[in-house]
Length: 278
Image (cartoon, rainbow, N blue to C red):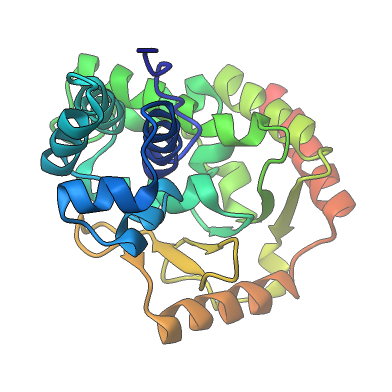
């Protein structure tokens, strides 16, 4: 029996498991109905698993391994997928799934460059100063953050609509060289067709986003959008509540209307970089 490939950190865990499950089911000569009868599962539930719309669990993977004669193939795959996910904080994992599947991400960030656009040195400067985090844990977090950026290198990456407060450009997260490298990266990715970076200038006097940063993910297949809300709490950061998500999307529009154009924003970043280097 073929061994599943190594987990792809850029693809949803649910989707990866579903693809491999369907492949092994067909290789074993089982229809969906035949497998469902053997493991006492409805056809609709199995379809959701194979399409990546339902999260698998170890008990079910074990049952399918037994019926399909796979040994521990699906259980081992699920364990590897979960180990990959374990590199990220538990509260962040639900959002990671949405972020990987999103067709577009609308971001507002009043304090720092968003994780998907951070350089490794900039990310390290932030993550190494988290309270109670060891140097080893900080480095693991940096690696995980860089892995997340793989979605931007896909053949069809999500569209990023990023709005930064002007203060982000002046906040000394790290030394001049690190800041210069971060601004160079913003200028480079800002030329991409799939990434739009705009800056909200101080002179706009826009106070809509002062309560904190957020991201609204536009999902495929007509699924409702989902939001990630940044805060000091490690509690409810991911929201699927329709009213809340719609409210955040509206806030993003209200902020964007006062932001500089894409070209003006890149010019401001370029000018700010010159100040840092001199």
